[in-house]
View 1 (cartoon, rainbow, N blue to C red):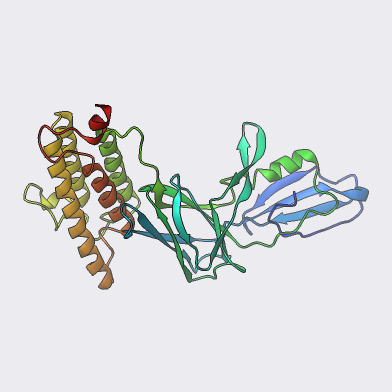
View 2: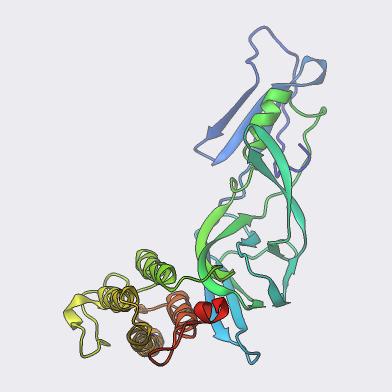
Length: 341
């Protein structure tokens, strides 16, 4: 297992009748795994596997329009919080849309092979979705910026994976027995041995594009954003919407008012009135812009934001994408209908 990230603590002494069989167990006092097996010449080998998860990372993503048509720029900021125990080394991002361009700054990326469990078999799968800080990684309390991507993909909620910096040392004596070796391999199988955080990244638009189904996606993004603290976090005006429209009630709160606006648009689409649905969605975009501006002002005053950059990107750019595919006047067909004729 030469690819394991481990710290080796070798204790070799003559084998006795009291020696225990091959074992792998977690030590809660250190947060490490202890591996014991019989090596060459009847000696007991003890290896300490230190997980690369003794970190508490934060990832912030901002999305903005580029000057190149529908291309979006995704800016990422990664923080290795002080309450971790390791330097932050690896950052892996999920996405499904191709990149138009990548600006890495002090980040580096390359193709790697990562172990994945397929049934009872472990396979190495190649991926080019791996980026990490150069040198020995990001120190505690340090913020790393400069990684950004350009893509025509739409913002979606995805996983980001992180690993701390841990020394890599091969097993001595040719490694452990096969059965124990398989148990150890599972410590490294993706996504094990990684800290997972939610962020936004570009994904391919659904094909075929169905407006009603896409509205359900927007409703899901709204609810997930609230659950993740990206939208109307507790303790910051969650019970009152100061940016409500005339047909909304401030006491319903921001999340509920957004959901009601989306549901109104959904009902209009179900009635096959795309024009009225479009008007509802245009109101939503204006509301999102107002809330985002207010949130930026709140941040400058040191307050919690009512809408983070992630929620803003999800609601603004996905809603605009849907609006662009609905007719502006009665009697017009939407884009899909036009293509079918």
